[in-house]
Amino acid sequence: MPRKLPAKDVVIIGLGWTGSIMAHELADAGLDVIAIERGPWRNTATDYPPDYAPDELRYRIRHELFLRPEQTTFTFRNKMDETALPIRSWGAFMPPNGVGGGGVHWNAETWRFLPSDFILRTHLTQRYGADFLPQDMTIQDWGVTYDELEPYYDRFEYLCGTSGQAGNLNGQILDGGNPFEGARSRPYPNPPQDQPFGATLFAKAARELGYKPFPQPSGNMSRPYQNPLGVRLGPCTFCGFCEWFGCGNYSKASPQTTILPSLLRKPNFIARDNSEVKQINLDVSGKRATGVTFVDTDGNEWEQPADLVILSAYTIFNVQLLLLSKIGKPYDPTANTGVIGRNFTHQTISDVTSFFDPAKFIFNPFIASGAIGMCIDEFNGDNFDHGPLGFVGGGYMGQVQTNGRPIETAPVPPGTPRWGAQWKKAVKENYLSALKPGTGVHGSMYSYRDVYVDLDPTYKDRFGRPLARITMDFHDNELKQNRFLTDKFAEIFQAMGAKQVVKEYRKGPYDITKYQTTHLCGGAIMGTDPSTSALNRYLQSWDVPNLFVTGASGFPQNAGYNPTGTLAALAYWAADAIRQKYLKNPGQLINA
Image 1 (spheres, rainbow, N blue to C red):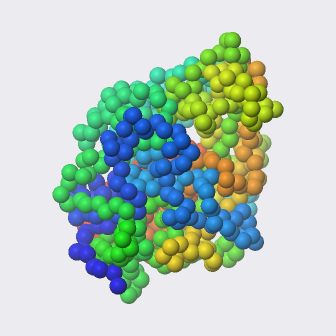
Image 2: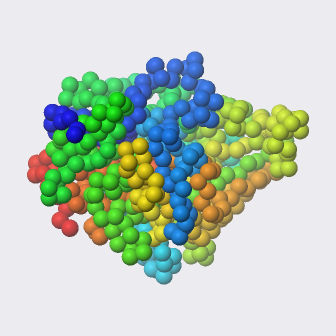
Image 3: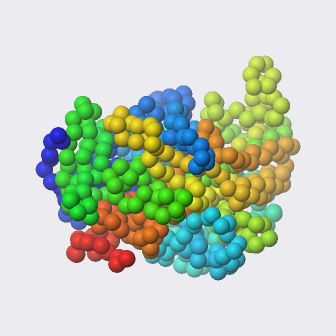
């Protein structure tokens, strides 16, 4: 029998980006807030000191900052008629663990989605006709527009001190920025980071081919910065240890370096780490959440009552917890009914490795940050005519080389032995003169009827709960898109003067062992119709009005960008709705 704790106004599940934002906003409104985080507490100064934080073996290879599969895992299969098996070692994505969540290890690529991304089905149907879309594609509009989210994108960028160059300022297109972006109300808070030689050469070749390159929007500081909460960040030192690592220089925006220092000073906020929420509790009607039940590291069960529950865990854990708590109707792909687990997506990623003459080109790839480089957006979203191409979707492309770390960054030409003297010779000859972007082609993945999450019928976690089961494979649309984008990307490196360009297409079937991104999206999506969405436009559960669900689980499909800027903007948007609407009249904010 769980021991009952004193009631709180708000309980938040997960203390990553969205949990931190929601906690800060609701505590500011005077509410008594508790956040419950499964993983450990993490501090910048003590957990990532510069004398050992750049340890590639510890953090990149041995996954220090991530959930251990022995703690909990998922099962995976490509097709519905296959038997799913447990994932024993993380490959395609890396579930975060601990305070700060994915905001600790991310590269800090800080994008806004395109205006058309939020009205995707309407936009594509109007432009190409309904018959142009694949029959089993389940994309839909979000229920919120870019213009509505713009002030909240702005808030997050100024919280993070984002470095970048505006391309569309109040409708005026500016040279040097992204001309395809939605209109922004003010410039980035910091100028772009200085660009290394490889990115500069890429931009020059891209301009010669008729493109409009722009600097990667970056949560790595280009100069000292103090954010609106009074928290100070220092300039990036270009160490090349961002993705997979915490930043001990206070140079990368994370919850620890932007918002937690302010949040922790609030007397009406507390956090419990190393505590896993087992379920969201409901009253006898099943229409109101009464709080959560969680387990601490000693195995003790606790009940935390609360008037308002905010589910802010990693994407797939949001979905799993809703299913385990019996909130919302589980998705049935055969009948095409239900909403929890529906429209699950990942990303369609590929790369190009280019080899240059070492006597002429020295790129020094170790001089890098998590989000440094030059990009083009001509082939993202619907910025180009898909009609003759037979697919929809796209992505940004860029020479965004995040590191030159010695274990994982040793590009060698095809045909080189995988070990021995010839391999060593090839590494020495090519290390400084080869370019291998961290994510060169960052493509969208749209949603399909047969890609979803449910509860596994066989495998259970240490509490006896069913594991989340992923059913996912690439479709022809995404593979066509990726081949087209990769070919376009390779043309730029050829124009740069590479002596050999090696294309690394994303191929089917979906491979759970090969890393792409940690950008799992969907499964508890937002929308305007309760029959096809779990949440309304304010991220409020259609079924349990005092439950809000934040994070990328709300995305109806994944766009050709990193999701963090959008999920953070949505968190601010939802927090504002709670403060301005829900607290004045608790209940359903949208009549279904």
